[in-house]
Length: 429
Image (cartoon, rainbow, N blue to C red; front, side, top):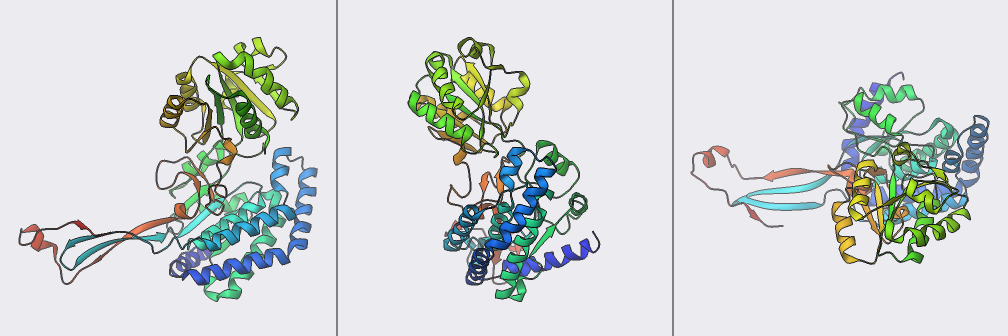
């Protein structure tokens, strides 16, 4: 893209201004976005229908078509999410800790925005609004790249957001920018000098590509291979209810369950009942040899199925000998995203929640709960399976970092090096 470096330089400068914005100004900008989204429903839906029509002609997969749709209900959810975000306290300039190193020498740890964030997301245009507003509230500039199938919708949403914030303050200029091509993405990967963080939301291959072709730190997850484990101490009615929801409530998302693990002691009773419930939702079942002895008419599950994120009405099932095998299977084949145990046994709960290495672990609850909006974060920029900085649904808290401020009174380190003075290191906050 022509002048991309100039755009990034301007965004880097703008990020310093945005970091200092007071919370009232940011909230007023968010209110204006919500207001203009509500007033622009007809135009938004018209552009979205054009995207859907083109996507259907191009043969876009059914799960992606579902993600692409932006109707009045989804706009209502977006507006509610923005209003919730307005009610949250400012995550920036919070004092996280204060230490008195010596008399009149105070070290303060303060939350600050990350700076300029690049987010590459899938065909969900509603994600563009969620990401933009989260970045705005947390004081970050954001470079957006959505799926090409949502180009018209993303364009109008970006225009609404930019027009809204500039009507509040011209200092919001250069804080949001929309990329439109894959070539643009390849280009920004070179600019670690200006971009502080990349959050890719896509396939495992795409995330690995980003990591290999850029020096910019990457936050996010690849696949969403989530599991439900039905323990031998499970309540069967509860297990059926959770399994059906975890698989079918919305199949085209990363926190939908792809593999069902069932303890051998409960399998004969549970599996026919859960199959009956899943048949009503038209779910294709694949099973291991032990499962097929009980559910004879289902498909064979292969080694590849345990590694597959279907994003469709398909569920693989494996009967396991004990909870340790279930944990080993999840930690080996899973993607550290979200996994659930169904059990009434406290020892099983303790072992599962302690040893399953995932960013969200559920107990007697659907994997579909792993979501920033559900967790009360005001939506999310994505799910992180990293073990640094932020993990799980990444909301406001995951979009700030911190810096240290040392306030002295002519202090010099040489006095301490020579033993003339000694540090107190007294925590005062």
